[in-house]
Length: 309
Image (tube, rainbow, N blue to C red; front, side, top):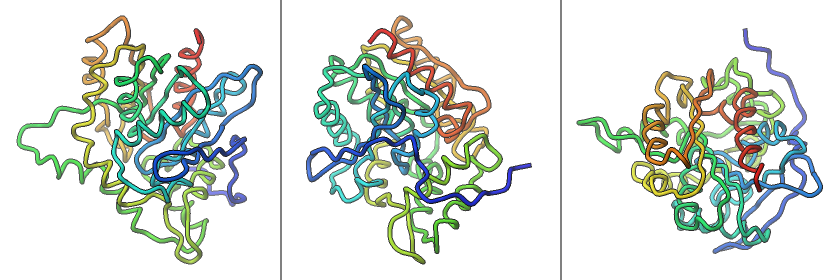
């Protein structure tokens, strides 16, 4: 039985230690330090999914502990970067991530991206391999072959349709949005920490009661989604160490994975000396980063990537 929903204080995201607004084309990109401080610090750049925010990484940051700090931007059109204008798209986001590396003075860095974030960082790593120590792709980065006779737009609508529907919704208060997320098929009864889920939901809300809504721009999401069926090409040309973590279940905790294991195995076989894969058991597309089991696996991959740095 799922645990009962708990009432929690707003914005409970104690892993967030600092916000940095750094210059990018059109304005400022909100970027956050997540996790404990260590001396000397070790950092990884962490990029979230298509309708998510930096708060998707709270569980991973906690699992890393004092081993590393995550630099987690809100992509333009989301979170506290939601007023950044277009154009959007993978190339623009990759340029924004380069601006993050430049701002912090990182000649090279470990990169970890979930879902859309994996495609963005694969593009960055393919075009600027000299800036990358290692890349961790989390249930993203590769484009699945189109089944014969399937309309590409229909497939896209089916995959991101529920997320787009949420962006059109309004909520009377924070508790209503928390409850919406708690009932999500991928999260209901999962090992996602309630406090993390509340912090994720609270942070995403903008507007005023009783018409709160998600911070994600529908224009940004639609623009990025328009490239989803073609954006996996960059990962095929990676020349740096890369690891792919995939989930056996999909967006709705369904048995249709976002990144099928066979697809990931084929990608790894193209460069066995550089590419490694891991299918994390008993997780879905969301819980691979937000749940305890998934976050532990992602943190282990980031920690290993940082080891020689």
